[in-house]
Length: 130
Image (cartoon, rainbow, N blue to C red; front, side):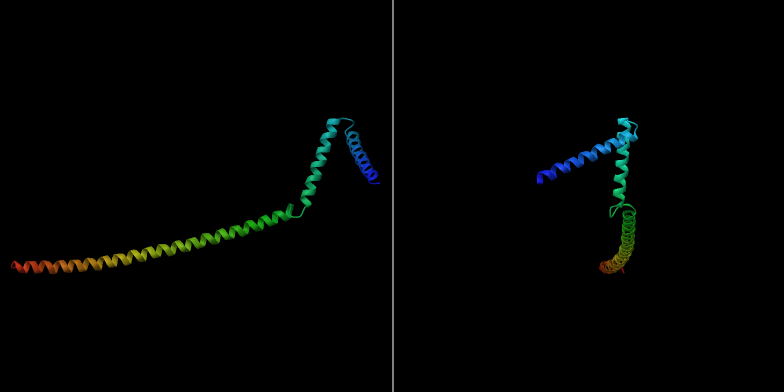
């Protein structure tokens, strides 16, 4: 009985294929090249229709892509804003550090100059100067 079902299935597939070939040849006026082009066109249309109706395809996929792009854009904008804030902080820190360093250098210069002036007056006093 199993053997009988296999041969019936094969028979039905063969009949359907012959019917399809007959349909396309009849609609093309008996020209096999035209029938082949029409078959390819119909197959392409059917494939596109099936693909557009699959979940996650077509307008749904486009909406998801737009949503993803806007989220990614927002993340990039946020990262740029954070980077700008950090750069401003770093710039301010650099300015503060430079000002602090200049103050310390000035204080050290004053001490050195005072020390040099004292030493000069001390040496001058040895030789009779002020």
